[in-house]
Amino acid sequence: MRSMIDDLLVPASLPDKTERVSLIQTHISLVFLADEFVYKIKKPVNLGFLDFSTLKKRLYYCHQEVILNRRLSRDTYMGVLPILNDGGFYRMGIGEGRVAEYAVKMKRLPDEMLMKSVFLRGELKGEHLKRIVRVLARFHLSARNSSDIDKFGDPQMFRVNTDENFAQTERYIGTTIQRKDFDALKRWTADFYRSGREAFLRRIKTKKIRDCHGDLHMEHICLTEALPIFDCIEFNKRFRYTDSVCDIAFLVMDLEYHRGNAHSKILWDRYKEMAGEEADVDSLLTFYKVYRAFVRGKVSSFQLNDENIEAEKKEEAIGTAQRYFSLARSYIG
Image (cartoon, rainbow, N blue to C red):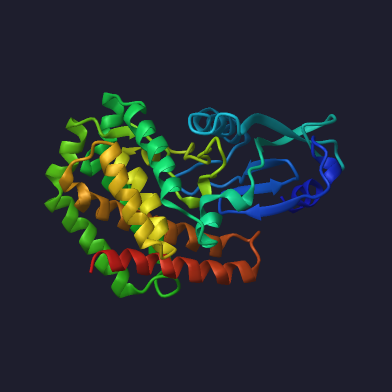
């Protein structure tokens, strides 16, 4: 892995002319940033909720990533490229050799126009929020629905997600989350499944369980003219087949994580109106915000076990995870 990373950081190893190449790592991806394009490689990991452990699986999910993301970002996703090794050097999509990996090729979007960047500059306006809501409400209302998708809205089915979260986070108690907060969130979640059961079932009856985005936060929305919304979940249907309120809850939570509570209120109020949501859906929104904040805390915690991530980045990940878990705790009082 290290040799491949080093080789692909050389501009000549990429298929498109570029002066510079840089790397961003997540717990599941290597993302190479060139001047005009982005190349995303899936790490050979099996985390339970995703399985990229074989080259065949990684190729399949590369294609799924392109297909699914073209729903909200049609012109951004270019296709899938092989990474070849001729016995001495790794190259992407050029030359001859053994296929070692695959990469999703995307047009590079301007960092300064990402919703998070615009927000942090203090330039996120009501008109931006209205455009985003218009696109997302239309997407949720028209996204695929079926009896198979409906099953994922059942509280027992969704509980697989939260049970998995708690099981996978237990090892980080005392590092990124305190025991008292972990226990309180686990108890509150179990209680909500009992008290909110009818609300879950009503969402199924009213066809609110859809093939959604699944990872809808500010870094995945670009406020250019086309408003591409990218990087949806391709690796696990149970994260994407979900209540539309669960989908929008991620974006509401992300604004609140960054102390944009006034913006989150505008976004949610406008979304409720445009998506024709019921007045009493706010309790479900809170449940899903807790879930989304906890997931972000868990995913940040995962970076502590990645040998490819530097110690300084791991320290940053600890602080990020702690803040997400604290936000989740704040939602339940």
